[in-house]
Structures are given as C-alpha cells and as structure tokens.
Image (cartoon, rainbow, N blue to C red):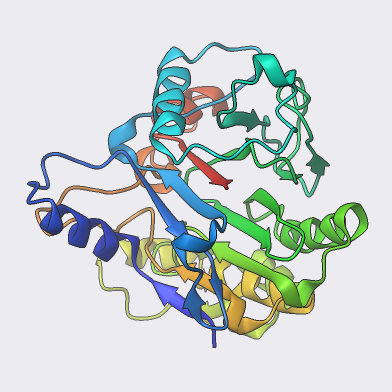
Length: 316
C-alpha cells in the first residue's frame, strides 16, 4: 500500500515539540524515503527528500538571472543538513578536500528530459526537468509551484534523483527510473519514490480535452467529474472546466508502471494551493493561488514572478 502523509501535520508536530508559535514559520522540511511501508531509518544513512516552503521566499531559477535570495537561502539549508562522509567524489585532492553538500540545479522547461550529474557545475546551462546522480555530495534540485516534485532513491546502488512533473511532463518519473537502470544498474523493486506537495484535485479543474488525455494515458483514477463545489466561487469554474485532475494518481500510475512497488512509495497529500496552518496562514507557494487570477494582459514572466516558487531536492 502507498504510504500517505501530511507535511502540514509534520510541520505542526515539529513546531509543538520545539514550542514554536506558527508565526515563526519553518522555511523548509526534509523527510525520509520509505521501504516496505516504513520510513528508512536515519541511523543507516539513507537519502532524504525535502522542499522549501512559502516562508522561505521564492526560489525562482533561471540561468540568465541572479536570485541572491535563493542562493543565500539554499546555501544556509545545505549547511544545516548532515555533513556527508567523503567518498573521493568531491572533486578535490585528498589534501584539499572540503566535503560538503553542493547544489545541482537545472532550469525547467516542462519536459521529460532527465540528465545525469556527476560533479558540481556540470549542470550549468542545462534545461530540462530531472536530475539523477550517484555522487553523495550533490543535491539534485528542481523548482515547483503547484507542479509535482518527485524523488527517487535506489537503496542498493545509492543513487538519487529529483524531478519536476508539470501536467505536460507527467511521465518523467518513468524516464527517471529508466535512466537510473541504464546508468547505475538500478532495479525498480529496490527504488523508493516520494511525491512531494503539489496542487490537489480539490483545486485543479481541467477541461474535457485534458481530462481525456489523462484518462487515456494515466488511467481513470486520476480524473473525476467536478460536482458540488465546496466554494460557491468554483461553480463558474466548473462550467468551463468540468473535471478534477489528480496529479497524485497520474504519477502513481506512472511509478507503478515503471516497476516501483507501492510499499516503497510515500505521497504528501497536502495541496499547495489551499493547505493552511490552523491560524489560516498558507504553507506553500502556488501558481493557482498567487498568479492564475491575474488578467490576460499580464505576461507569462510577470505571472511567474508573482508566485513563490519552491525548491525541491534530495540528498544523502
């Protein structure tokens, strides 16, 4: 059975443990992968996955832009994560070794393109939507804001991958599994997968054409007829977009077809658009909530800058 968790509940439990008010927002969250329906134990040095949150600010990334806030925030996060043990892959001589986690970013284009990264800097200029690596010092990182962050961890060969799965790129997880098989000899039954927070079917309305596309390619479970909206404002939406799309179910279909076992999959059920803390504060950045309502005269670039983009990453 697929394991389903709530990042909201995880965050609230951590705030309670540390006696922190919700006004002191966490800026990121990391979690374990699962195998045989249980979290992989920390003591065995398994990989983790995580993402930044609304409170961290925007992690927008383009090769031709400078985002100092992103640079400083992610550098601080990497310092807080556990320092890895050098395996000789850091690119430094033994006398000059400065082992620390190093970011491996990629500029997203809503594709199914996945790249292998081996050393810091070798993703420079790359455009695509997925990265895989066996270097324990690299942190494959993508960005999301309603789209689906997906993470893979080959427990046997110690390889990891991070993927951005927008609706156009649904299926990239299968490409990632295939790439790991080809590059690292990974076996799907030994791969753990995590699906991070993304827009839920509660907030994702689609038209008949997109519903038909997803039903045909990713199974009937990912589409439902939109009926009896909880929010009266959604009634007008349903006239134009009469179906709800579950990107969770679509990507579970992809992962299972790729050979990943259900008991090795964990899903964050939070919706980036509507999930809130008890005090009403939003937890995640969301294109649908922050930018989709803007008038048609607003350019795509301006819309992109209006939302809080999150970084999604995995690491050893």
